[in-house]
Structures are given as structure tokens and as C-alpha cells.
Image (cartoon, rainbow, N blue to C red):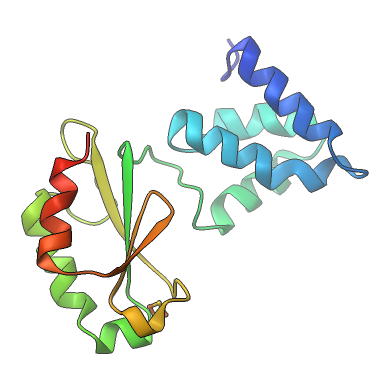
Length: 155
Ligand code: FES
């Protein structure tokens, strides 16, 4: 059984044909997989490798290199807290504790209802707003206890 629906397979095949060199669409294809499954499993990577006519190791290497991709399902809402140098100096450790206590999950874990997961991330390019908070790939500026409490209101 394929890791993808027929419609999803069509999307992936389209990424193989979009650029002059098929593997140029690999990252975009994996973004689609991450969005659909909230992770990239070895089975999904193997099917992507078949479609792109690439070795599995190449696809798996990309899937495990970029922090955009996870090998375990994230929550429906994926929260990132920067723990780069500037953000560490601005108190990211305190906000990590706040995330743990407020969401009731440790880093890289997903809440029991599947709604939220959070993880420390490297520099998000917003050092002046540290500790920087990212929600579903959107920068939310400086993490504060209030902003973290509002995450529980996400649907
Ligand atoms: S170190 Fe956190 S955004 Fe740069």
C-alpha cells in the first residue's frame, strides 16, 4: 500500500517534472509530505525516492537534514522556540519551561489530543526579538508567557 493517496501521488509527480532537473523539486515534495503526514516517515521517503528516481539515502538525507522536516508526527500546530545564542541570552530557557508547563508536553512531544507540539530551534533570523517564537512557520516575535498561554486557544 502506498504511503500516499492517488491525489497526493499526482502532486509529488508534478514536483518531479517542475524543474529542469527532477531532484530540484525534492525539497518542495518533502514539504508537501510533511504537511500531509506532519512528518516524513521512511516509507514515505522511499516512495518519494522511487518517484524522483533517486536513491533512498539521498531523500532520507534531505528529510533528516532540514529542521523543516520531522520523522515523528508533529502536532497540528507546530511551535518552535529559538535557543540560539541571542535567544538564550534573552531567556529562552525560561520560555522552554513555560512551554513545558503550559502545554504539558516536553520538547519534541505532541499533546495527547494531537493539537500542539513544540521544539527548540536554531537561529530563526529574528535575534532582536529573542527569545523568538515560531508558530506554524510564522514568526510571532518575542515569546512571552501570555503568547504561550494563547497557544492553547488554537483550534
Ligand atoms: S538566536 Fe534566536 S533568532 Fe537568532
